[in-house]
Image 1 (cartoon, rainbow, N blue to C red):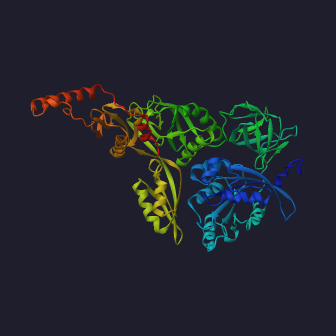
Image 2 (tube, rainbow, N blue to C red):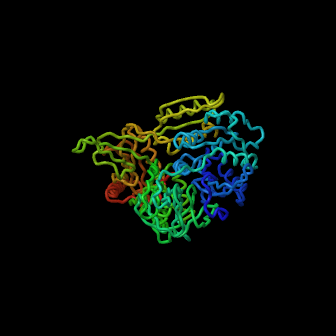
Image 3 (cartoon, rainbow, N blue to C red):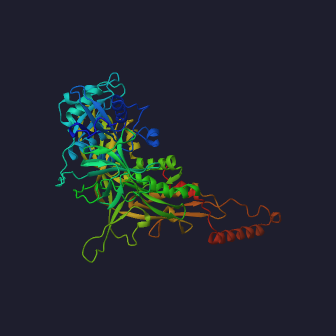
Amino acid sequence: FLASFPEGVPVDRIRNFSVIAHVDHGKSTLCDRLLNMTGIETRGAQYLDTLEVERERGITIKAQSCSILYDNPKDGLTYLLNLIDTPGHTDFQYEVARSLSACQGAILLVDAIQGVQAQTVANFYLAFMQQGLEVIGALNKIDVEHVDLSSSRSQLASLMDVDESAILGVSAKTGKNVDQLLTAIIERIPPPKPDATSTPPSGRPPLRALLLDMWFDRNRGAILLVYLTSGRLKKGESLELKHAERKMTASDIGVMHPNLTPTEFLHRGQLGYISCNRNQDIRGLRVGDTISRIGEAVEVFPGFEPARSMVYAGVFPVTTGDSERLDPAINRLSLSDSSLEYKKVISQALGTGFRCGFLGLLHMDVIKQRLKAEHDVDVILTTPTVPYTFSPLNQRSDGATKEIVVDSVDEWPKNPLGTWKEPTVEGTFVSPVAYASDITQLCYSRRGTQLSYELIDPTRAMFKFELPLSEIIVDFADKILQLSHGYASFVYEHRGARETDLRKVDIKINGDPAEALSFICRHDAVREVAGKMLRRLKEHISPHAFEINLQGCVGGKVLVSEKIGKQKKNAIAKDHSVAGDPTRKMKLIKEAKEREKKLKQVGKIKVPPEAFMQVVRLD
């Protein structure tokens, strides 16, 4: 692949860039087109989307890189372009931020039909304001008839604060003007900057590489995706990871073209992979670590801020066979998805499973689908919760306040008196003006506080709300789409925390606690939420020979209840001797009531595991 550059590609002819955009604006299609135009046969759509779940859903979940060579017709030189295709959904913003750390520029792609959307704004601020990258604005789908290019161009130029002439128009589907985009990449995106690491007296620059991603390959073992900022890496060299304090051997190195393509060397400015031996254990490694040769002193990268889990849920196997495969499957998934947080738990009703932290609901659903597709494990997901923080009234002896994170009822403090806080997010909405009022009313009903409101153009508005995370994790996005008939977009990012008042709600069945059904709830919503759960549980418990009481309790006080009537049985139906004898009838009825009372005291209620699953699972 790089045989024409035996001494390495000159750094001034390397361009590292990402394609960023709102979901479904054509990132993967544009990447396919760029690969086609530089001599790579993609054989179908979404070529860089390698996961089965990505192809089924038609979205990018994992950022994927590809190194391509492009012969620039303007100066006759060959350039090495390192392209990274990034996710568009807000759940995977962590992947986007990580990818941009290895880039000097980005293509901000906008659907010319839809115009600027919420994720467009978030991606621009991430690339330009936070990372300081050179951003090229481009409108996609210009081949569609009757598209209003002037409006979309004006919106994007206004967002980027550039002249409208700087915004390119392309069609990733037909390839129209994509050659102009390639020229803009070479002319407007700078090459990698010199590294700050000093060169020792020996004259050989030290190796310094940033760990961007990692995964496990069944044939090759552990694979590390790295970005070299200094030095040269040769196959077979012994390396160390500074933060993890682990040693490894580069048994194979190369670039993604787009598959693993071996090379003899990796040079400064390149994105490439390092293959470890098959016995190398990469558990415990963190993306953002610094890789160097053993013994070389280099400046350590600050690393990436760990991904913040926004929602937590239980992951439990459906069958015994799934239970045996779930543990290794979760471990394997965590190697390729560093944002997945998990710990083993045991539930009386659902068995052994995991309590997992996810970036959002889509991330949670993707993990479930990957467990089935890649590891053949069927799981159920319990209703998601958010991480609350609790500060007890009694401070520590040193006067400091000890904060604990509570994301499940198992971590509920023995003495819950203190200050509770719930996480909040800043939600950004882009909507047609006609639907903005309905969306703002929805936000107010979810305890939101409006932060801003402005018109993008005469027909569309962008506004921001501060919202409790717990109010948006289940059905909020669907409500937005319903109210706007699919025309509004919504993204959110962590903002902080606000005080709240929480209760632990215990569900009791004939006085016995059903621990698997206990949950944490805001105090003013206890009756509503517990009532829904009891009605749902009532549907899945069969009648017994005695009456069953279902109760939702807080601190021993019953706040809401439901009853399941006893089985209908005529106490005198089989005794023909009582015909016309009211005394005998009353005696039999009294005996039946006594039996029922005794059964209620000693009888066990059969609650099938399926009932627990139906009540706690996320629909």
